[in-house]
Each structure stands twice: as C-alpha cells, then as structure tokens.
Length: 226
Length: 236
Image (cartoon, rainbow over all chains, first blue to last red; front, side, top):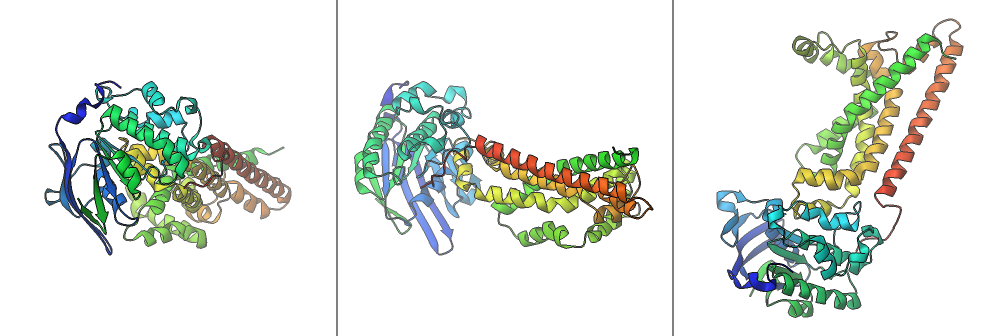
C-alpha cells in the first residue's frame, strides 16, 4: 500500500470524539467517547444501539443533542445547528449484508465511491484493492452471483476505494457462517495493518472484536461503557 | 384502409397519448418515490388526490379542468395572458385531460417499485460520497426502472382510451380533439357509421395489445439488465 502502511496511525492520537443523544420513541441512546487511531471495537447485544450509533457517526441519522468532532473538524454540534451530512464526511460504512448495488457489476460497485473522491485524496487504486482482498476473479460478476463471503469482501473493497478517513464496520461478518468468518477476519486485519485507516468495528461477538480491535467499548441499553 | 378522417383520429390519439405519458413520467416518478419513501403530514391527502381520478366519473375531472383551465377559469386566463397558451378545446387540453386521468396508473407501479428497493442502498451510496440526488439517479431510479416503464406503458394505454374527461374539457372537434374513442363515439351516431366505428374499435384493441406487449417486453429487458432473473437468493 502507498503512503507507508501504518504511518498514519502514529499522527494525532485522537481521531473522533463525540457526545451524542438520540431519541426515537422509547429508545434513548446516550453515548460519549474518544476514538483513537487503530481499530476500536464496540461490543454489545443486539438492540443495544450499536447500529444506531454507527449511523449517527456516519451522518445517516441526526442526533437530538450533542456534538461530534473528527480530529479538529466539527461535524455535528446540535446546539449550533451544525450537521455535516454523510456524503461530505468521507467515512465509509460497511453494512451487515454488504448492500452492494444489485444493478452494477462488481467493478462498478467497487469504483462507486472512488469516482466520487477527488483524485488527490485517493490512496488506493482498483488493482491494489483487488489484490489485497483477492477479488480479482469477481470483477465482471453481478452481486447476485457472489457468495456471502465474496459479497462482504467486495463491500469492504468498495469502502476502501473511497479512501475513507474513518472506516465504520457494522457487523460485517454477522451474516456469514463460522468457516467464512474465519476466512474474512484475516482480510480485515490485513486492511487494518496495511492501510492504517482508523476503524470502528461493531459486533455482538466478543471474539471477533478481540481479534481485530486495539481497544473495546461495551454498549448496553443505549450507553457506552469503556 | 382508413379514411383521412380516421387517420386524423389515429394520429391525434397517438400524439396526445405520447405527450400525456411524457408529462406524467417525471411527476409520477417523483410522486411515486415520495409516497414510497417519505412520511409527512398530509400524505394521505396526496394519496387520495392522486387516486381520485380513478374512482370518479371521468366527466367530473373534465368539468373541474374546464372550470380551472378553461377560457374563463382562473388558471386558464392567466396562462393565456402570460404565455398565450390556450388549453380549452385544443389538443394540448386533451393532453392535460389524459394526463390527469392516466396519472394514477403510472404512480402505482412506480411506488411499488421504489418500495421494493432496500432504502439502505441509498444510505450506502451517501456514505460513499453521493449526494441524495446523485444516489437517487444512480441507485434508486435504475432499480425502479422496470416499474417506471410498466407505469409509462399503462399511462400510454389509458391515455389512448381517455374519453369522458377529454369530452368535457376540450369537446369533440375533428382534427383537434377528436381522438380515437371520440371518433368511435361520433361514428356510432351517424347513419352508416358502423363500419368506420368497427374499424377504429378494432384498431383501438390492436393498439392496446401492442402497448401492453411493449410494456411487458421493456419490463423483462429491464429486469434482466438489473440482474433480477439471475438469482432468487434472499438477502440475509
């Protein structure tokens, strides 16, 4: 990978800091944390608000109160009505079931975000990502012709090619069986080690999180516990 | 085979139906998307308003159009004074009458098509740098295309058959507003007009079958292009 592998991880330690409140009906999420470079795991039972928290960080949901900062850049400040929308945050989100665009080929899926990133911000090209994730033989296929594991690798590749400033992973292995999980986890580790992109990895499986993350936060009933 | 008068009716019908479809596609796509994807106050009113022409006697919307867009109607007067556009008793008015009547038939399949698309695909697009409008154009719209095409074909067929609202709003003027159904109706009421009415009726059936066949074909082509026929694996 260009830019000297994990060099970026030793620059500013504080990548993301937030203190957010989000209400929807009975559900209340209140979470505050400082996320450092490297991989941060967020672990918790289903329904505890992990996905909601990621959607808030990604800019897909608007919090009722609070603030969110990426390095020194304020992305959310509810008291001053600041809200930077998802498409300007340059965070990529990998969904549980990949959410590949069914009408596009694997290649067109991969370059969807790449095409929308200015050329000076791009850190990888298609060939590098194809090799890193070993998906070169899939480029001309349609998402419907991929297995679950292949789909998740393509989704990860699509996120990487966007050269995100922060990579958000929402249970990316949840829909895979144990054997496939063991196949994909090394790829995730490779992405973390070779790209140096800060990652937030959400899962209800503690072992996955421990394998990847440098530190882990626990989430319980809409609250983050260090 | 057809007399010049019958050709006139056929050409006029095709022109009116084509324009009505072109007018309906952008509005119908937007309203279909809105009803499928957004929740807002007064949504029910929009739903009722959109579907109303389907359940009203067609002469009622026609009468309403005449009151609003006619030479003495508020919008009609404004259109004529500002742009010099006259709708009442012209083929353009027939386009408006057909559009209003055919609109619900376009909106319905479009709405279903948008509803079937996972909303998170658009979210995925926005987390990859696409603005909502760009995500709509590059993800949702191509995926909803089969629905839009099917709706457009229904809209076209319905416009070809429009009778009541057209008659009420723009009358039955040969060469201007006498479309196929109105021509059939007129021939039924003149002595020895049965043969002509029969020819045009047969033609109407043929056109309707053709339009539905084209719709079916477009739909299958779009589905194949979007990869729906390759798989039936449910997504986890």
